Image 1 (cartoon, rainbow, N blue to C red):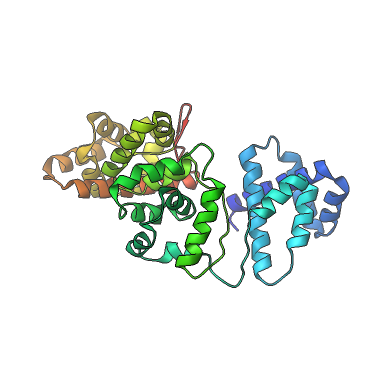
Image 2 (spheres, rainbow, N blue to C red; image 1 turned 180 degrees about the horizontal axis):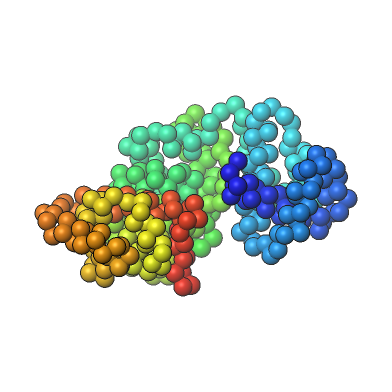
Length: 337
């Protein structure tokens, strides 16, 4: 395990240990007693260093704990009772019940959603095209954003905005739609159980939009804006678009430049504003900047699809760097995904 990964793991263990200790010191002591001496030292040392814990960090620690518990369950060990008991000690009866009830286990079969993710997008689109926008939104909320975006583009255009708007609903996808979705998947894919996760919300909608071409993004956002300007704005705030690069810190742009091909950048900047071009040039050496300008001057017209494809490649690189913590996509009070 790499040092950053190990540090992250220790912090999450410490968060759970501190939470358990606050609720039941005897239970926390019992857990620590079951560990080897070196692990006890490492965990207790990190418990003292944990500091302030955000709500998101607590949620992530609990989710990782539950994922591990599910893997244990899938291996054939009957652990649900002990897992539930530990959760009760750590976070109370009601929260533990909520967490456990959010999981539908089936160690014998792949979930229906996983099957949809593995199918050809055209096949998935054909399967769900006649379902309601709400049910499709619920399905998309659990699929990989990239696959969901591909499927969305194959559905009737007049459904696009409604599906994304339902995904972005303030309270996520409604429980009735969750039940409908499970019935649909069971019918289409011979009945596989589904692991529930947090459904819907503006981030889910933004993640799907981030996977499709910018022209379609604009069209969908404009359609949503006509009926619900607030939702459209919230989705947009959760997205990171190519033109948003201009708002990044210079050091982030410098890091991005080291990861992208100059030929790709030449094409991607074809439709960019002068301000965005200057943003890149300012963060290059004088020689590299001069070469980029020469290449842009010498490059002939490009198809819009080519330009958008290169922009998407660069955005994928940016998101990868952000996910690795190498750059920040935060600008002022805004946070992009």
